[in-house]
View (tube, rainbow, N blue to C red):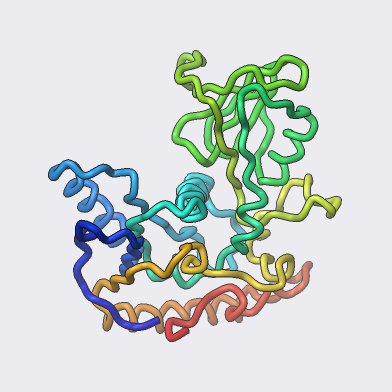
Length: 288
């Protein structure tokens, strides 16, 4: 990575490339994202292209699964980039340095649901479990689903509101958002997406693909995929890079890499499991 400018204004008129703005921390990225939202609203620009890509907020090699709300925000961003939509993306240095599941795996794992299509519910349940969703009696947070007769409720990580699928046999009769408080259906949709609720997706050929994932599954990604990709790999064309205070970013990168190495030294060899992949397989060096 090289050094870039320090400003983060909106793309000039006529520029169709995406932008990637990198700050030192998630807190700084959130503040900048909020400022850009305010600016977009003030001048009447559509907010659709503005995205925030947060880090997991778990320590490196910590045996804790990332919070699903963060996963949801990350998945929506990857979905937008996969669809080749022009994006003004704000992220933090730790989020950018962390490697991601391969683009091909993410693209194949997504599931589009269309009203009128046939889909066996057993196949739908299998896809949901593989994507990291949890089955319960009601859905309350992203990453959950429930089944009541011919109704399947799914809180997809693709949307801020949960989905309700009404089946007649194996045919999807309707796809709607619904209100959690009233449980009443609201907006009717022609189609909807199911995106991953975890960032470790075992292939269908593996028997354990339907089993609940352990909390530390994401750290095992390189063992499953062979190699990981980066946030930059998800852009269809190279974005315009904007580095907020490049000298400070370089210093932060060195500190973060030291933190990663120390965490691997402490937690890299669990007492009852195989060693975790080394830091270079899970994170980028700042000078790469």
